[in-house]
Length: 289
Image (tube, rainbow, N blue to C red):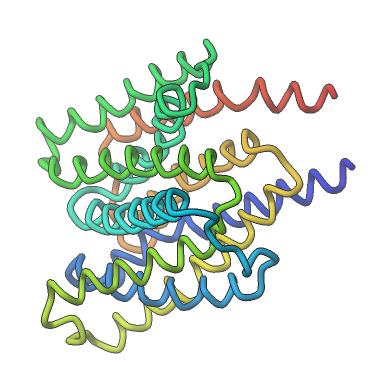
């Protein structure tokens, strides 16, 4: 049992570690956000569809019209999240984006309270307050120093969108996640293609980085994270999201010399602490069973 839990933790850590290169790849692509979103969505759609075809629930179908509508809504949320991530990274410091994204689990707790009637525990409420203080520090810094207010607004919208998507996936846990990611990718590609008539005007170097992102990075990261949930709790998985929050800015600093603003580091530290506040008690409780 202990070996299985260790395996699950290693898989979650590996998956989030791979995801932490996301912002770096967006920067390396070095083209318009709409172009990145198109290829990211297209390649992600193809690769995740292949994984879905190899999964156990590939025969899933909605049982009624209402379930189909909810399934379509989750796909739209996923597509919106994909676009918001790319646009946020393009218009603000990548560190800001990953810090803001890390608060999505707390937005999910808020949405769960209203949509699923789930009570917010005191420690989660404390974690939400701490994380939101971190968000205000990051967001407020853009007004005064960095001037990246548009990108930070995309980042906040990303966190809210992901929080709602997580809540919907919690409510409809039987939805095939890989199919959702695949179809959302195709939706992003279709929308971006309609609004940009120079979508194919890119260099081979840009295409290379986008291919790495869509065909290798995202599929492997999602696969490892999905598999890890079979061995460890969601609280434990959420704890590993701090890897992306801390590592993504480091990759930008190492490879592109992009130094995160000091206030972003302070705000990010508060968000990471909030994740620990929320996740650790559940992990300790599970270990005692």
